[in-house]
Amino acid sequence: MRGFFGIIKRNMSVYFKDIHAVIFSLLTSIIVFVLYLLFIKGTFVNGLTEASKGLEDFITSGDIEMFSNGFLLTGIMGSALITISYSCASIFVKDRETRVEDDVLTTPIRRAQIAASYYASSSICSFIMTSIIFTVGLLMIKANGDIYMTAKDVACAYGLVFLGSVSATAFFMVVVTFFKSVSASSAFYGILSAASGFVIGAYIPISEFSVGVKTFCNIFPASHVTVMFRNVMLNGILDRMNEKIGGLDNGAFVDAVKESFTFRATLGEKAFSMVNSGVYVAIIAAVCSVVCMVIYSKNYKRV
Image (cartoon, rainbow, N blue to C red; front, side, top):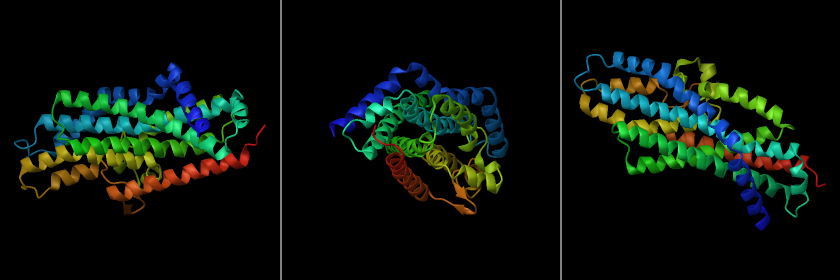
């Protein structure tokens, strides 16, 4: 087991010592943040303000502002889970191109364990980075007002960070096994960075897309994790709004917000509950991690 943990430690050191890789893995999250401040926030705030006409005595501009800020953070987290997890997993490709993999294969460690060590180190790095982003984002939101998250909600959110890191890394570990050069991996990363914000609904809620596009987006575990984040982070403030309205609209406003901003993932006509989404993500993570180890064991011979 010393060899297994040694590879994990080595891979984590490689990732965190490469400052440029760390910064570029955060690039998509920064883009989401900038686009939100420049364009998207105004659209969301105006849409919610328009939808709450007639309820101004109950729903304040501050509540709408806090909801929008919380939605921003869920978008940042969803995109970060994709790009950071992929960047961490890309160490596997770099080691292949630089022939470090040959040295690793000469060690008395089974190939499935080597693959597992890459998976574990990438998952840990992803969890650390996304946890930092979430903590900073949550503190910034709390500094501007109350988002009505309990201690249980915060703990659940960190649990989702872990689940998202593990599942996204497992998915991308399968993807990177097909790349033989860093240039090819980087090219795919560029496409991934551009598409990730749309796939998880950071720019436009997935509910705005057609059924086919919604189904495609919700195939990916990160979309389900983002939806679960949305429920954990924003249900508190929506419940607060509902309490203020006092049942005058029979909950129609909150229901409409949840429908518009995608609080449930769907595959075709099937809508997922929070539990079902969690199970789906866990199954995808388990399957992808096994597939990665099988591919590595089958395709890579000892030198």
